[in-house]
Image (cartoon, rainbow, N blue to C red; front, side, top):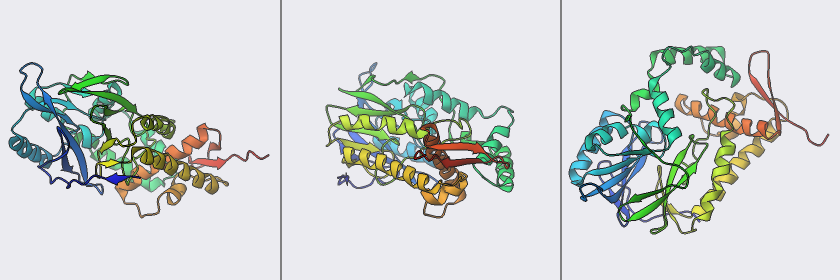
Length: 349
């Protein structure tokens, strides 16, 4: 059973203790999902031996977030000793450069996440966007939609505008590594699918898992296929890297990036796996006759989608359909309009 812990949600610029030596922070986001959880873990500076905190994730790179950080750090009255980022999405890595520079501390992240973040911030450097357009066409979007999206890309700096300059140096985190924070040792566990090499951290001594976006309560992480890798099998990677977390104790305290800390890890892993398999079954029933990716959106999403949400919904539908295509449960063809058509393969014949 998934249960939230009985701790008040911290106000922006403040914190709540969720476990001995671990503080829970919350920073605002300008989206429907309007917050991100961050965590401070009591640590010791290896050079000065002074008390401080290792930080897990940093918030989106906007002036309001920086102001909240300045307020919080003044109130905390202790330095940061490490900045650790679970993955490269702007709400997680956005303020990393500011905080690493402010305290001149090491920056920990997995190799793939670091370089994907660097690539995102570098932009296209003048590369043609025909592949971005082709991606939207393959998804079944209209010519008008594709033209509008192309114009917006040309007028928009993209995610780089909400990620402050990323540190030029990083400490690589890999599957199976052990990271010492304070007197405790945290095991690095890697999840894939939501992002390339998402870092989760488990502390056996305290029974705490920092799950980032890989395991969330109430909501499901976005598992998408995007224009940068249209033949990715993201959902398979996600489903392949979820079961390992059931090897941890059932009473593990999970500290996620969104919503509230909770217990019931095994139940939540099972729920997430079942959720995606339910979506796959619905798509198989819907695609007995060929369908575009866009046509499948109402099967997966029952609510009305705004422009921001539709972007992620298309990517999520693509991920589920690619999973069925690569597992040879569906065929994938291109019609005369350039749209992918996914059709269930009848294995009874």
